[in-house]
Length: 236
Image (cartoon, rainbow, N blue to C red; front, side, top):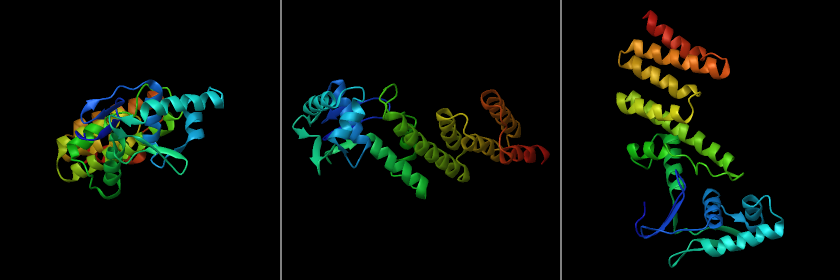
């Protein structure tokens, strides 16, 4: 977190701070800043008004937008929102936790070299994007964030497993299963870690627990790949 500039947090909770001090904002200004933080290329005024106040008339929504702009445009002496080519966007001086973590997660997915330290990256990937906010534009952004953080956590867990860092690998894969218990990739990595450590009984138990979950929730079976992994371990 920046201690000297403007820092906007969207992961876990919303908070805007300047020089380390929190800046309280009304709901409309919070939602506008969050929208602009997610859309890095900016948002046209009319589109922003429609996204943030979909149940209002166009004139009322634009009036709400002007009020939100008035409250959210500055953090201390610093301008946080700019208008560029008729689009509203965050000023470059504003650091956003989502953008920083997203960049590191993307690096993890593409080349296995995140910009954040592994421990910090895993910690930040646990955080949801603005949980409990009811805005209609957020579910799609949450899905994008969830898919990225799942791929990053799974990639890191697999990297740690190959390096023999089994405890860190296991905890990283567990974090992914907490985000999406149904998804098989992280569950399979957990089984592979148990097998790599020689804990065949634990591998079978993990597989059976996952199988019960799939049967209960979806009435389906684990993939043949995962089933074969456990069967080969039993017969070895």
